[in-house]
Amino acid sequence: MITEGVDIVSNELVLVVDDEKTLVKALTFNLEKEGFRVEQAFNGEEALQKVFELKPDVVVLDLMLPEVDGFDVCRQIRKKLDIPIIMLTARSEDIDKVLGLELGADDYMTKPFNSRELVARIKAILRRSTVREEEAKKVVQVGNLQVDLLQHRARVGDQEISLTSKEFALLSFLATNAGNVYSREQLLEQVWGYDYYGDVRTVDVHIRHLREKIEKDPGNPDLLITVWGTGYKVREDL
Image (tube, rainbow, N blue to C red):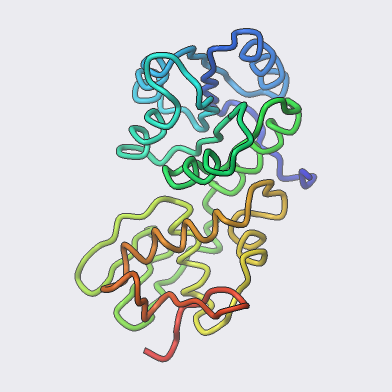
């Protein structure tokens, strides 16, 4: 659902990438009706060109594209930019969804879908991407992990860690509440938002990515740990 009073109010740029021109036209109409600016691309090469030239606020990206497929487009975007990506797929296989999340997609929708739901998801992603100053006023220190909430930076010892916006939000929440255990559902609620429509497995994917970046031995973590049968936590006794 969309919470009243906090909807995104126009002028954000959405890049819609799909080779189905009828679908692109319908999405463009619905997005522009909600006040968004819309750019279109009909193949992977055109999508990459427009992403790096225009730096849209959100990319709606089909997987099955000519020339360069959606997986490669997502991979190349993530190498350089942290733009929210919603993947579209005509397939229902879990492997497509998981791979999309692995590559850095923020959400996915399976065709056919309701255009209004897609608009709702775009608004939700943009709200969650907005930095709230009141939540970013301190540095959190847990062991050798330091999270600067104001500068949106994280360090392990003397090494600065490169994180996506969602990885940073997840790490910030757990570090700020070190010692507390949170289930996947609670983390989705706190980090992704009440109106997140995706799969709880996205939490596991982000946890694994974080461990690869902040742990000496990601396979045997000593900071970001699993509490079996319950969820995840950042240890406070370090």
